[in-house]
Image: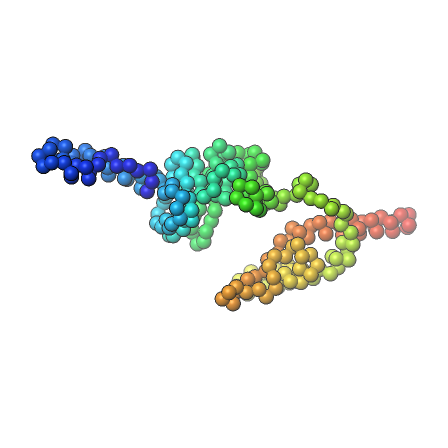
Length: 264
């Protein structure tokens, strides 16, 4: 509960002399206090910067701009919805145009929701088609001074998962060569998933095998485990294959055109 200040000083009333008319607690005073408490409970979160645990069930809705400072744990909350004026979680001064880290921003027409329904779902509502205002921004570095490294953006029809690629962030730029040789080293496989065999056979790469050819596409280490000995599985981002596939195709086309020129 936050932003609640007692209207009536009941302790001061208790200290008054017996017989003093002001010592009596009026029904209207009690009604006022209960109404104020009910409003604070229904619409406010703790705005202090201290850490703690916020637990509850059902639906919680914020009005106005409310912030949750420190570290808060949401337990058993079925639905969390921000009102039109927005809600802020944690650090609130940087990256104000982004809907999540988390900071729904009413100025940009963005809202947000976290719903638990057979898992955790982060829903973001964007009422603007301005693609310069991403739904979610990803940053690397200290809070407030991190460098933008990607975003999730929509124009109202499609959703794009964007990786930062601005030339101003790059140096030592050279053409990608010898791509065909590297493509020949790739080892795509057919396989089934142990945890969901009903999906049948699918295609893809084995992470540590791909790591030997295109290490940028692989995340995590082979056979890694956590402190309890449980596997930390490797992951693959196939989009990192696009540059080498493009370069290999260009090399192949150059060879084809050279052969065609000889035949012609």
